[in-house]
Image (tube, rainbow, N blue to C red; front, side, top):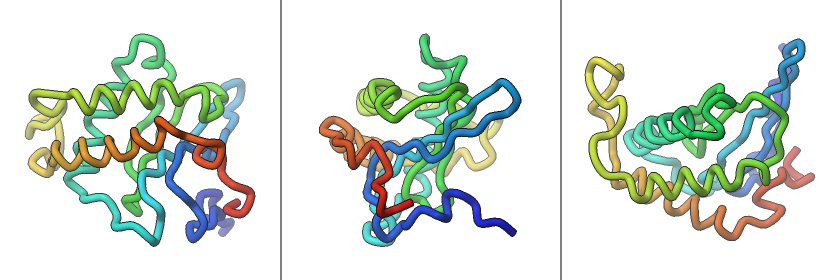
Length: 161
């Protein structure tokens, strides 16, 4: 079998950031997959599953409800390695194109109060596994990175691909 593109990224050199993982064409439709890398792979402790689950619920809700971007959101979900998330958008974009959206999303999470969207037995298959405090902490840490993002946080460095 052919090695998938994400396994061709050198995770020993990868730093936290917001990266275009790939773009794909499906007929006349182009989609862009983003790597929202919260943690430095193989060097930092991975995220706690309940915190990741909460981040998934909050981010997916925010993105799919956004006035400008909701119709372009295809998917938001966790990486199996628990170092970040993927989001897939309809269209071809660069990281800088969605940086304001990501900052807005993280700010919304920092201020979030109330019940976690979709966290009920009727709406989620593992609704009890949530951790809003750790989710806010992880998102705050990532927001600080994006606030001062440099080119190396927005484009995969040549030594990782």
